[in-house]
Length: 439
Image (cartoon, rainbow, N blue to C red):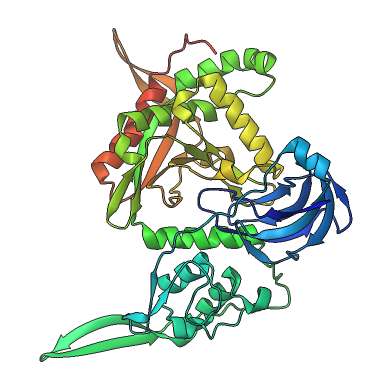
């Protein structure tokens, strides 16, 4: 028998740790290679982790609720030597993080030379801090000496993401925030006020509902996005009569051919992908004072879950799929999203997002940008309206299918001209949709 460590796998380009939700196997159980043995949760999704080896689950190293870094051992598997030679499956190597110095600031915002933290465990206090905890501390201006006072609920007193966020909330109540600086007769006067939580009145008839983990993550990301990006929204009304007629004409044939429903969403995704190719500077991300121009066009689509939460699976290289391919991809991602069957990779890497608010009967919306992207388009409901139609014999009034498109964009790097032209180009592609095209 050989002992092999099962490591926390890498589950996305931006995921550095995961929380153990529950073990599907117990110590002493026989497991097969690629069999799911535990469930974990990341900031993006809940997923199952398969075993890299077959054998007997000898020891569980990570308990339920524990936060584990990518590449760390979570279990020990006893494998048969003959099986090892046959399968020849090496254990995954831990993901090594480059040492990156992150300056922690003192309460007055001054950088502390002695408060530098590194992304490994070699801190001056010999207390381990994950890169995520360090980044939150840096962002909130928490010095190393202050971070050492934060109580940790993790293994060996480790400070988890939840611990540092809870500390930040209580810290906000106690630390005065500078709100105004005035100079009077050469003397600088600083007016401050203490930020306090809003007290909510609760009576006996009210129901108190605890946010689930996903709702907390959504809330945090929406607030962070508004803090990060100055949002501006441009609106366009599009005549999508050709799209409606073509879809009605082909939906039955598509169902017989592909076994799924033909919705408007893949048509909208195709139009957005074509508009992004025309205006590639909307397919960017911001990193400090640099603009990262993305080569791939990966379009996220917001999907409403039965719980009422939203999740955004990503259609990778959407510009390289035809309409049938897009329709199948949309149906597959939406179905698996509602059954919590998406992998973390399918929720990462998006460069632009669409949100179909029309599916809820809304005519338009002003969506919040999904960071680090710089744009998101909301698709309103398709509604019949009387409209002026230009004909060779003159103008006439007719019934047309129309919808509003609203494009929210990051005004730090996207000006009104570009933001407006992008959504106008999407509308143009929808209005000029070819009625005679095939599936």
